[in-house]
Length: 333
Image (cartoon, rainbow, N blue to C red; front, side):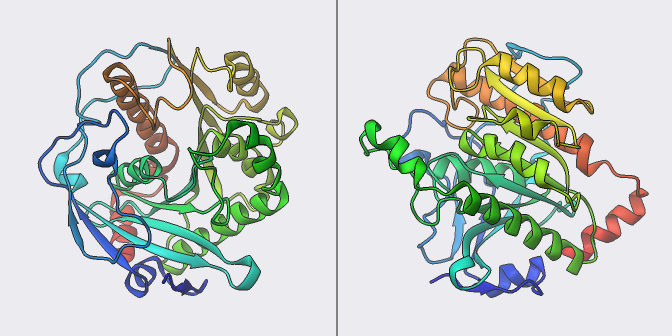
């Protein structure tokens, strides 16, 4: 059973007070395609916490040419393997009663940069292995990544008839989803403050979550977020885009009917503030976190690298001196 975490609990004690998993990065590699039991990087949320050792993907270490069209976004291909050694994972319950939200927290141990990331899942929910795989890799780059359950235990299941999708989606009250996203952001911001850190948060979203990302940034009156990365966001509201006050990176494919390129370029112009659009040629919906071929796998790697550098430039590179930054990281670990 997951245990609730109060707003006064620090990130470190949150990991200690809940069921904790320690993920150790062993020698590479494993393939991430096609979908199979072997593709599940993380155990289900209901499994008991133990020290888990698994082979991870070759992501982030390739030297392949990107087939994407983009401007002023770097794609550094090297990652210090030693920096991706340890990640803690913990199941959380944020809030109480009817407002309680299940979530999963990934926390970098060795190279923690003291920055929080809120990751909004696609329709398959926060327990999906591909979503947790992606969140793990973000954390192993130095971040604290919180993945909330946007669907309150009722995600879309792959075996459901497609003609029931709109009915299912309509059952996910937009006001309730928005409230849960805001509560999750507030919780993470409070945890960082409790640890003596007051950095801006980052926001990442896929598909459904990518669309809600724009709305969440538009509601961010407390200026908790410093940037957002939307992967092929769906059903995005241009009216919300006008109220976004931070730069957003939009990543998609030019063969994705659910996220037309024209919509993204329009959002880029509406938001401004240095926002960017990265389009991968020939790619459809979901390629960056659910690759289904070796070719998509390579582009998923490159999309991650672009996102990683964007987050680093927007969040991790701060105005503090290196000494001050090091002291903050020591506080959280």
